[in-house]
Length: 320
Image (cartoon, rainbow, N blue to C red; front, top):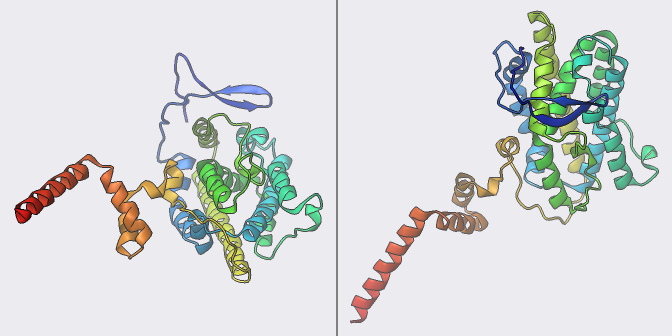
């Protein structure tokens, strides 16, 4: 993919090996044959299945138990440890080197800090690789040792997803679990080495799209990415089953976010369509919420004013 040229390129604050990376923050010009586009299209169904897992839907709505969040953090620790171990081993591989950003992306140390917060200094002796996570970890090691190009699928699926929805997930977890506003327990979601998430994702996709890959290899990367989604769903399913055995916790579930809001950074509670849907289901909270939303819109305010004036006139006529 040919880089766009500008007279004054803007920096996204990313560094690679100590050198500052400068990228253009304007919109990307993508081709249907670009790997990022092929991946987006080829994993759409898997993406939808993953976001519709009950565990994920509960998380996005703020219904997450602290014990499950801790176990999920442990599962991620094993996944990222495996992935980053194999990326390090293959960092000079021609298909890995262009997308090698350890300072900006690697999550193992951040997850270790989160686990220490949740479990204490002895956290390493309190967590273990579960049956639901082991196939994911084993597969990452397998491709790292036998077919390193497929690590592109795993790193793209995990890191780009983290950058796209991480901040909203952080807010949901922080509010639902009443975690400190200073960030303890949520280091995984904070990419301190990246100034602009949008700029970095553009850079990463550009580097990935420039990899010299034939069509057959691109297709294998798509297949592997779908496998990655499947492994993630195995982890979610295991957590969901564990959740059934854990006593409900008293927590502020609040209101969560759908996948659309995560991608756009919006708040589902501000959506009148969502509120209307919930109000129609008979939920009194959303009936009041919908009424308040409607009153914020000028046309509704005018209609209300006309209705009040009509009622006042009718009352005056009746009393006379």
